[in-house]
Figure 1 (cartoon, rainbow, N blue to C red):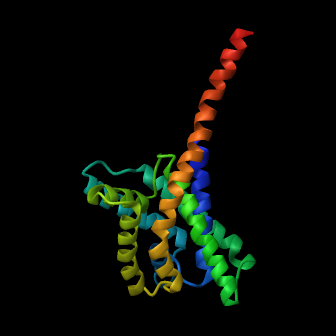
Figure 2: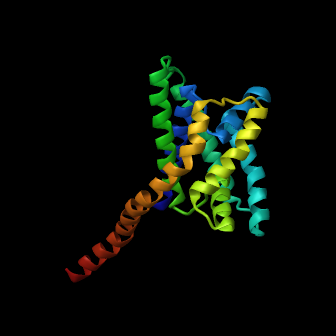
Figure 3: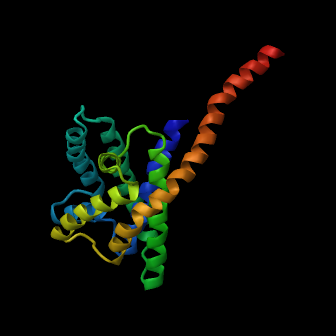
Length: 214
């Protein structure tokens, strides 16, 4: 059951990312970097997600002084496929022209990203390398997710600006609100997933005991 929520969380996350890209108001600094690389160098946005994941896995391994989390590459691979899939599906369906429709599209994306990230992080299976880096910085600096996430966003913002990625008012909102939204969703998803996973793990035993009593 945990792995179902792991994949579901990533699919929700990538849907949110695709909404922000389609809004044309600017994406998160990391996604802006991916789009910038895709436009200037080639390959798809999802492909660059996987390539940068390899680099970040090495960085995380150095900071934690432990063996590289190869499973993080699996998460990045699913994320990369998810981004390309949603962008392909939404390309003709969602192309907001008016400013308020762009704001709605971006707002939906930002909230969905927070929900998806919080959902798959609580499965504690294999975080996307950038999210693992968020948790590592949180641990090393002894702060909260809001601070560590904002710090990482600022670093990628500079890199995205150099590559002329889709930087806009949405990027600023992501830097300011992304960590805050994730911080809000974390306790909510922990409570919901805790109940579901606990129920699913105890139900078979309960049924077994019930059969024995009969």
